[in-house]
Length: 401
Image (tube, rainbow, N blue to C red; front, top):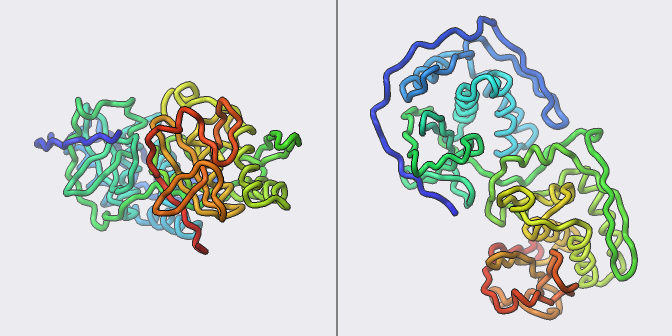
């Protein structure tokens, strides 16, 4: 559940002196960012020491010092790369993290690393802010989306979510209310989005092959799928977003080309209903089941590509993968149906099948992509869900409809 955090405003502490950190005249950054190489040379004037004794005033001194340096070439390089490669905000933030790591390694000084991330994001135009809680930096950003597992703050009727909560050891921000640091960065007013609508291009040589198999109508289906381990890194700290955002995370190009053509060929000659049934059972039986508490110790939603890669997955993960496969191969109207402890997908066919979900006057046939005690067909619902309340949390309507 979301948590409202009330800010407490206190007088900021006095500035402190900053020790010398580097005498270099400049430094070149060069690293692989997925299938491309990012090059950057930054001026010595932006190499600023972080405060030894963290306070609002010392952070302001850091900002004043770096703001006087030659930082614009860094921002120009970052934003040009973002535009050229059409990076969504989440991917852009991963790039900013890598640059901050090169300028100021996280392991050497976490506060300095966080300050660089904040500065680069703010100078890129995002409404990114800082606060202090229990002598730790809280890095938060303007975001009006439904993100359920991150603390967020309401400031002037605007929502800000924490970007570094995973580094805070699950700090209770109710017990340690953050005190905002009043720094105004000109032009930093853009909201941040967690939507990932385009995957980065990965090096083809970094892909690994995974064998998948399942049985459909007494016939064994086996095929190889290409997967990239960097997918897991990309979504390591990705939060639990709303279902519309979640269900629309795509596959990378190499994985797409190894999955969709095979499945499309497999359903060729089948009726639409039979093809969807095939995809439902593929999603249900080609992967081992385990709930998130057992697997990760917390709720975690895997993207379709992560589900293909993972050894285990649960109902959220399979619903997202099944939705994606039906959308790509048949592009049918669908709804995501959420129960207290379960989620499945219902598909609209030309002729309804079995148990129906009526949504906005239209009939959708239930499809269960997660293993159940019985081998359910399209239009069949498990006994435990038949009289359970539910909520439609996402509705997909193809453009052609």
